[in-house]
Image (cartoon, rainbow, N blue to C red):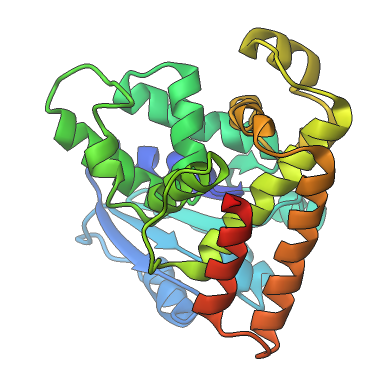
Length: 295
């Protein structure tokens, strides 16, 4: 069987499933070893062992049509092929050429996110909200997510999932460190200096300030999560965020009015530009900005 697996990061879930369900020998290739891939594909022997050939980064291959042509002609029953093609939109010309393939595709951002959330839920036996929260913290790069989920599974050692219980293992994750520190700053808690991950922290604070400004312009203040989800989950201002992630920011509106948020947002852009242009030292610039937030 030949597989063409394409789209965003969650497509790799399909690849893992195929590989885990197969007992065949596995050989990996990428855009730099296409000739070796084709040689192995076309090498026939009555005594060769059943094999899956996995071609990664196929989207970086210049003559992908020639590769597909060769795989279409693959008549060896003991050879399966997986072509992994990362993209965020369909290529109709390529798709029409996939004569002898089973196709898995994930182009839609919402579908991609839902598949990753489902993956977290199935592996951690947690609810949708916790899975969503974890995805926001860890990020949607599949193998990084898979690694973190595996750490959590081992840490729980059969116990039921609780977000508070897994914080010790998550605390080693840089994204979680930034996530928590951002919340502490917006809550005006005491922060220990010097800090680390300055640029990532500045980006996180800027992102949350943008969300806060959008919330303030809509006049959203006190609202239950269910009401927020029902009324704003598909709002154009929040289309790239999970409802729960945005909802969690509402609590910070008590510390900043709309005018102040806009001032801080402009200051964050100014700080970022000055740091990148060499006009402001990284550590001093970010920490001075944080002190403004803590006033």
